[in-house]
Amino acid sequence: MSAADTLMLTIAHQYGSGGSQIARELGSRLQWSVWDKEIVRKIATEYQLAETDVEAKDERVASFIERLVELLGMGGFTTAYSILPPRGLDDAKLLHMTRTIVEDIAQEGGAILVNRGGDHILAKRPRTLHVFITAPLEARVQRVIQMEKLTRAEAERRIAGMDRLRTDYVRTFYHADWRDPASRQQSHVAQLNARLSPLPCTVCEQHVLAATVRPTDTTPLTRPGLYVLRFFDVYDRDVDEIVALSQQAWSTFETATTYRAQALGLFRLYDRSQPRGIMLLCMWYDGFDSWQISRDPAPEAKANFQRRHELTLATRAVATRLIPRIS
Image (cartoon, rainbow, N blue to C red; front, side, top):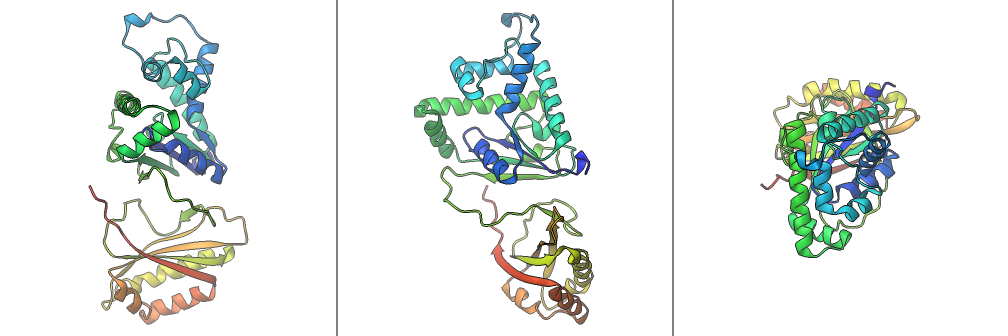
């Protein structure tokens, strides 16, 4: 498998939203490397090993590293990154070193990149999901108070300062609005809203899936209606036949006049090395009645669905409705 075929994830997040914690947890579950503060440590270490004379600070505009030290304090920077800040590292060199490190990581794949413009550097890399994590301001303030032992006023100043720093960083280096996921150039973008104290939960199972014949693009789902997620337990040897049967059936299933339905996606396991696995079918209906009526489709579709049923070891379905985003 080439580097372009390996999956990757970038996470950009608001300061105090818990994005770094989410990245660590996800990396642990996926057994992927996580590059967050590690990138800064690597840059600082490599730069100090080859440090040369630089212009005096008062002869140029403060660099992003210097602004970060000013915001966090020398002790705060050292505590956060477990290393002294690199002296005299200008923005051009910072951008070059960051890009080089990120591109090296991308060659290996199977990694999560947190902030540092990773979503922009890897905008054209295939098989890469870019996630932007936000949280309500009050939740961010409370998290920073709790995690960094600051007063409320200190936490609010820290959040405002980090937001300005990240906004300026992305605007200067990548000519984009860091706060607006719509300004990103990637085709695979998701936005998550993280809360301060998520309900405790246990992961029962987790899977990495790949699309088959649908979906053909990554346009977010916005249409009101009933969404049914149906999981199939199958033998891997039958996956290709199930895909073909489904695709053929949809040509008549979706043109019925007695109900409204559409197959939005049919997914298989990304890793097909095991003899058994799962598939996921995502269906849209305009309402519960259509879901019920569609169980008796046209004969051509019905025959294919019957054969698909014969190839299925077990199935389970979850129905839900799309919750519109409130601006």
